[in-house]
Image 1 (cartoon, helix red, strand yellow):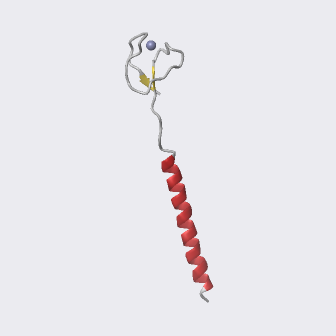
Image 2 (image 1 turned 120 degrees about the horizontal axis):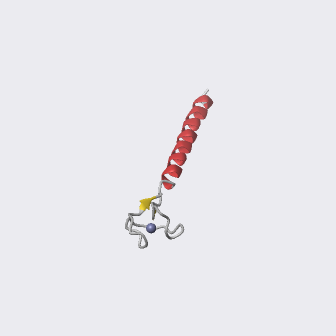
Image 3 (image 1 turned 90 degrees about the vertical axis):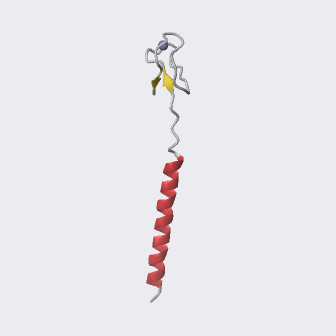
Length: 64
Ligand SMILES: [Zn+2]
């Protein structure tokens, strides 16, 4: 009666593969782009890739 063992180990292998696939999928989506924008929205939604000051009102850019 070895088939039970085979089914059991097969299930474990499938389960670990599934969990591993899930984890790699999550880490792939972890890259979040941080953008900065003027708190007064002087430039109608224009965003900056780096921290700095708004060229219009000279206020510090806010992280979005
Ligand atoms: Zn501004």
